[in-house]
Length: 456
Image (cartoon, rainbow, N blue to C red; front, top):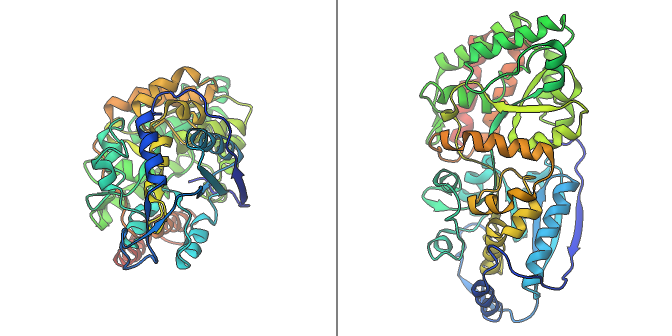
């Protein structure tokens, strides 16, 4: 996750302009349906816990204003607002009040809103919070709307649909698809005359490659980031061996696996494949501007594939992208983030229609490009691919296409407590790096605390 140090909060009304010609996904039949919905009684619900999605009704035959909230930067805001304007062009009675900010503090703000029962109608969430928000009854169950195709998921892969499902219920729709990736400095490797990392390398081969980079640079640049505290990397390493990060609501691995993981990175540090602990801790924040492949202190960092364009904007060097070590089948069709509806919205059918528009409309796909990741809908992705001009976005698309047919089955979204587990893993890895703990001591502490976090 990108974690800017200074959140930016913007509240901007999205105006209505004249409707253009309908394109892919802009079904006139759906517009007639929405017109009928806007003139009919709409569902409303009071609080969060214990309320019924359809417990009360209210007549709404005037304008409808929906509140929308997401995290991201100015570019994401510009494109999202443009996409929402397209919806208002087709449905002039619907306008939007949008709020956006950096990822840091985003969920704290949502939590405060949830306490008061005033969560925005349409929110962006990620897989770390999907299960918790479902169990806390904050987001709307979309299952029936998928069944009658008012929310059309037929363009999504089965794995991506599953990754928005909690306890058999569709609770969110992927706003984009992403993959864990190695982002590397192509110009630096050319200068050092070291080959680029390749997909399908074993983890041991990757560490050896990184050692080669450090040696070729006379120690001026380390080969790779130390990923011992990166849950994405650990998850794929586990899956490459037939394991999983979670089994239901419990950890899917034990002490032996975690010790082996930590020892892999101890060997990498011993071989000078990684930089010093202070630099790695700085990059652990996840902030793009602090990623060491951007600052020039490593030849490679681990990131989400959809982050490549933002990382590229931060450096003059050409960045390349390849899958994490291990077989591509360890990866799965992963939502970079989701669109979800507030369970207490007064306009559930309208919000559902907006989600459907944002995820199935070809013109919207052209506007958004790959800013949130590859478009989750394959038909929309094909429709919009000719309009993508940014070289980094093109590299993301090519990378995604190269592994799409090789992906493994999707697990369930992470259980409640996952954010705490992620933090505990970072802490355990940092304590090992600075030699405050040995691998066994750090592993025992992590397992004890992680089990407790998942039990809450």
